[in-house]
Image (cartoon, rainbow, N blue to C red; front, side):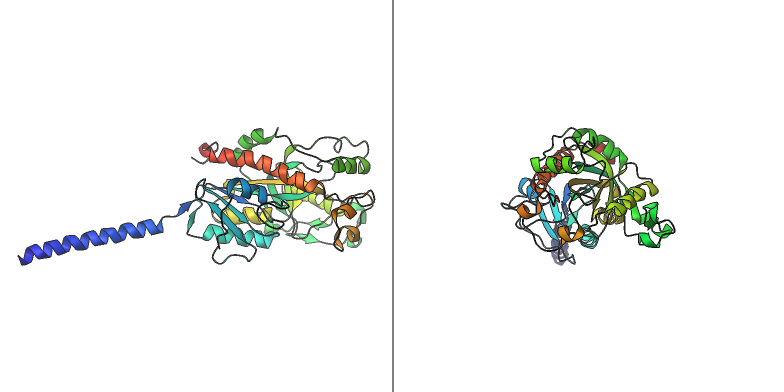
Length: 351
């Protein structure tokens, strides 16, 4: 009788152990993320007001989802996740530090499984004067860091007319420039190449006034491929334009410099830390130019708060009226990308 009781006790103990093991396995199961959208800022609310980089994506893929606090993250981070479609959205905050810290913290969080995720980094930027116009969307094939190198004032050069004030640093090459997955982009670009994009009458007028007779400026916006040059400081001017062109050439990027922005190098380096460097798609919409337009100066553009009406004039053509249309262009192209990922169109690349 005693032996029978011991057998029953052993069975109960075994069942209890199995139940505990199953409970632990269930609690340790991570939530899979199929797509992680990474805008950098929103103007105000996530829905229903002036749109920034995040709002249209939030309303379409994460509508109604509450903000989720990420452990040990940057104070700028805002994370949302939709259990129904497996889409997450991380608003990082502007600049390389905010973007890098936010993405590192999220990808490190054991609550979510990013092993099969594709990161879709979205945002706006300044266009290469001479090739890009307001409203263009750039599929970024490489990103370079403008800060990692040596900078000088043009008056200190032996040849002040050289037009280049940036010099490379050999010990930073491994992380100062990153190229994205060419197989992914070769399949993706034909999907988005013919996406119709918006412009505005003000934008067309500004381009015509500043670049009369220039064929590159006299066209409708389109989707193109190009290199992004990342800088923590938002810069404009002929010298830095020349530097950006040279930087893309120096790093042997597959496409010419197209857009300047503030985060892509950090996003790509953070992804690389988790073996996800081949799982990044980067989209940037052009909302201003990388040189000062007619009648502008640093003081006029950057000093003081000015309303839209006072900024968009014939004397000061740093046009803000493209911004809303630009965000809509960014979303239209981004939606094609995200929906294709959710449909499994790129799964074969990672098999």
